Length: 424
Image (cartoon, rainbow, N blue to C red; front, side):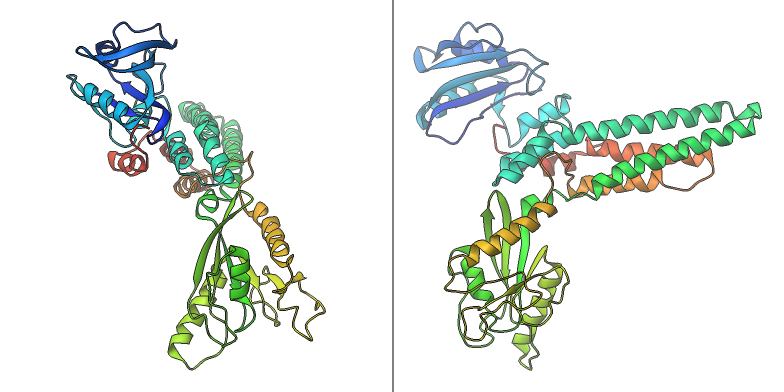
């Protein structure tokens, strides 16, 4: 096993740079540059030297494996964060036999391989590194700290207990107590169904992808209903051309926005209308598709919205004859009304918090939900054969174990760790 090194702190220049060394030659490499190493987990100031030259004066810490972030011996140099300092220390490490620079995600991959974290925690860390909003950070941190893993392991333990009960039934099947066998089988089936319901409840909760991808808010309505004006107001920039000419917007316009820690993608669409113009017809068809697939549809037309769950807004309330709020509308907005944008954002936020994972909830990723669904199907199989029930329980446990990476392939891990930065 190679010993690897990399700068694990932020991009230089910075006040401090943390250079991490992990592997079987970590302590030897630390001694080569710092001389005598301090006691484990105690910082000590050392001069880092190569030959007769001083590279830097740094705090040095040592962490004996396996109780470390990577499960290996680990050394950290807390150096000055200038580019030249970092380059000099890394170059010196690279000249030590048995050391090489780490690749993206290699420290975390070693932590996974050495059992310090599982796949669900590693995926949470990848999401945490990419988090751009507070809600993304909270969900990723929850996964990193093992909330998802704890739930999966609890379900696996329950499956294991059910499997043990089935095995006991099969072992004593020749004792001719049919009534007891039937009661025991029914009890296992009932407990399997209860476990399936518990897992299904988590599957049905809001998915974590909504936090990362952003809730898609699609603004729909007929031509000249104020859609582009509202998009510019909510996005706080002139993203769409506003004109009194019908059909100005012919294709969808997406504007990413973060508001109160929640990510949204605001979408302006072509006006929904009958048309003989083939280009405009394409835009109308795309608008209809976008509105149907929206997480939150905003409707600005005067006729009943195409979706019953749309937020129906009375637009252009500053135009003569449109001052009064018609029945069925949530509220009115007007271009010259400074509170219009806040009213829309309040309605969007109220809807969004019901569609996103709660801070204390278990939020699963798409592939995790798929594997949980496979487990639920196996647990709910209405078999009357104990042998088949035992096989179903085995399949359920394997599906849940895959979430923790117990059967992860090299290709799967490559796809995950390419998302990490070097030094993590």
